[in-house]
Length: 364
Image (cartoon, rainbow, N blue to C red; front, side, top):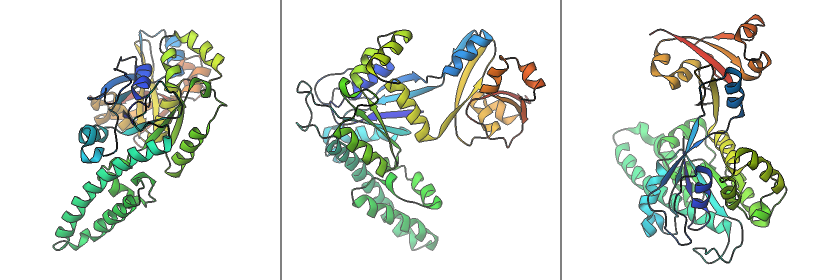
């Protein structure tokens, strides 16, 4: 899964990226210090893996991962090539979802590209550039479809949808905020519009506003806007995340407790990402290794098996599965779990659930 971190210059994108990936992307107090996107592969925190690791004394434990792309700061006019905009928009096109960082704190020592702190204005600038880019794509598609319509009247429905989306974008609204029926949504998804990509708005706050019960007017405005387009919002202090990245796990817990924060920004981002993209994890466990595998919710057993190896899907016979909680109740003893009827034998139509611990049987 690839997530692209975007935002105006100097809102905390690279600081956040450095903190959660420890990849050392350059972070400087001037615009466009990020030209090519830095890439960081982040292990997804999952407490279940550690429990299974200790239970089976596994030789290795492999979490699932998320790739974060630190995409350079966009500016007004990016859709017309300003600030190397076309190149940056191309990078956004490659990711599954957008992590849009907005600055929700005052600091005279950190410059802002517009000379003022206004997260809603920042959001409008970025979203408008994505919208304008999409409108150019739609203009060409509408012209082509209109021309082809003369010889193929079945294209009328497609043309109607294209015009509907174009008019909506013309109101300054992102495509993801549209109300579409299933057929329309399926077609719009094929257009690969930038403003249709799912978004997580990350409100970068000061250390004073990082506590769970802390809030400010800028943060409230971002949260309310995110709700209008069905997007997620996560509150993060990039500075605190930097401090956390230097600590050991036991020290992190104490630090967060002292700050009045229930979980790290990375954990918040991961949960929001999984929810936004409708992802779950199933598990495989044993003495050789414990591992988490990410799939879309609704994935059936053969396709889940294919995540491990294509041969597993091609030769799928059945899956032996047990819910993680039930396995823990049995102390990891599958024989006991089978005696209690907790291990199920599932066929090709079984829809995998989050936390399923699975063993696949297949023909070579």
